[in-house]
Length: 428
Image 1 (spheres, rainbow, N blue to C red):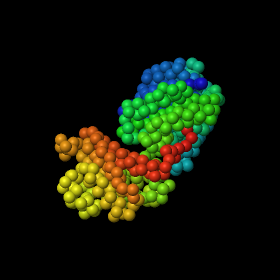
Image 2: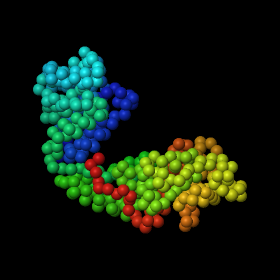
Image 3: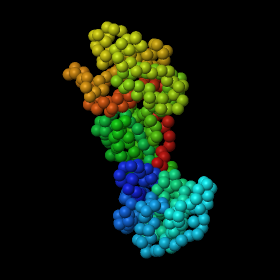
Image 4: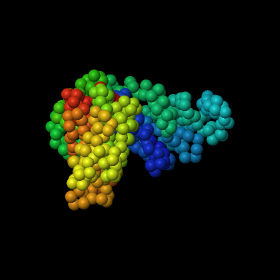
């Protein structure tokens, strides 16, 4: 298999002023083409460092893809550095100049003199047209590597990459395809998940598996290579099915799925509705549900009942329940879920109550203690969570746990362990 390296250029990327999305996008598209990304470097707008990065990566990969530094300003030095590195002078291209001037004219603008630099290219470079911007790219060779130089503006880079760079690289893929599958989990830590599926991972000789914990859960990336997409897909699906058999309770979706999207699909498929009563999460559960277009099909209402008085007045929580057990309790969570279901006439009532922190905790009810409630025609179930000291993290994790509680109930009601939205592995 051929290999490729990526260089992204710009001080703004190093300083964090701009997020480097170009490298991620290029890596994904290279993978789809069957070319293995082996290295990615980000350097600032400084000629020596750009030249050094080029020298290093041209000796490590068959192709080097460069973005950034092709503009008309003083800090756009990429073209000059690369021309020096390959021992070629810059040559003026009148046809490029005509194209750039025409773009300014079409916008009713006069082209600044500084844009003339964009019509210069290394003498033996192959020009890559830029139909959506003023900075054309180019292709040269250095050592044994093909060097593709593209603008740093993501919209311009993507069009040039897809229409001009990847077609030139496609034949170098040697007929190999790399596919990825993301498996999304929630409600389980990385070490516990590893205990459940560790032997599946150990036995997956033809599939690489990476575990990527995040605040929202642990994501598993399955990667397989094959002579065809079907061959790679079969390898991934064999491992995926074993993972679902072991850890299906914690797997809510795949690839680009979000938990709220999956819950929405399950509610819609069941013809069911939900109403939400929140305390410690402050409306975050309802917010996540309404992030999904069309959520009005199944979300009836949401109430943030932060005070005890609101819990009693809006959700019919009995005074005695709060007096005996407190607002943060299994009993109150259950009563909140039952109350919102009754007052809204929803299929499911979902509730959260807890101590988000950083203050307000007691030895009996410390910061991070959260109770969830889910009421349905079958009764009410509750969950007790012991989270951490960080308020924002607690709110996020409690909201996700509440959605997952609803997901699990919907999955049981449907009598299936399938993952909603389960699709073919994608070259991502």
